[in-house]
Image (cartoon, rainbow, N blue to C red):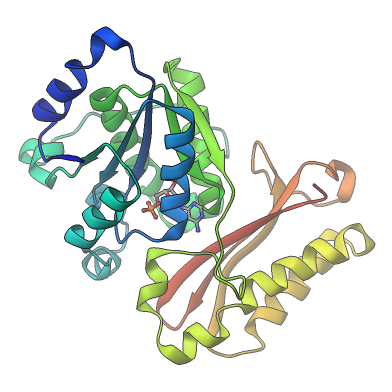
Length: 283
Ligand code: AMP
């Protein structure tokens, strides 16, 4: 596996393959890799000639400086995992390489409510930072296919919207959420849970599954309130939001008129660790 820290080297290496016109698959990450990330890598390997993974903890998508400082980092372990899983290139730029002198391009697009609700509301500036980095990484790697997890459902929709609006020549491929045996969605942030918190963290997915099960038998508002109460029955949990929303626009729904096209999404603090998860309903 090749490892490059500068865009110039990465582009040069990719250019050396240009004549063969390889299909390039790309998996952007912030590192601290787990099986969820590696599933994206194997899907990319199965569908492309070259698989590139980036590891870059993107400072401009963190609205909370403490979250940025505490974000787990382990580049040498990440590189080993990627090598063992057949990744062809690791791109791991520095902040200065991505944003020389702190400067970056701005992306001004109209998203309607898509980037303003839920994560957009509680993490101001988050999606702006995500779009800037993803666009910049696409410009460097020029992938045919880029792989994103449904675990970050709203991010996936925002990136799909950017692709459409800017006419980017890349397929955005959505990958199912990979879970621990007890149902907890795999996340780099899980490493920050205490042993006690980790033992109870399954509650989030359990409640999401119950919501899926209860479905249209209960009015939407009642189901939301029930879910929030159920999660918070254990006082270590604090729900930031719990919404049932249209799968494409992420507009929260108030009734079951949409019944085939909704997703339940939540962000929950467990201790001081913020976890997000979602399940598609009625699929
Ligand atoms: P991150 O490193 O958290 O920015 O994630 C990089 C990519 O991996 C994003 O597209 C995530 O949605 C995806 N991802 C993270 N966790 C999971 C998971 N448990 N299952 C599937 N995809 C995931």
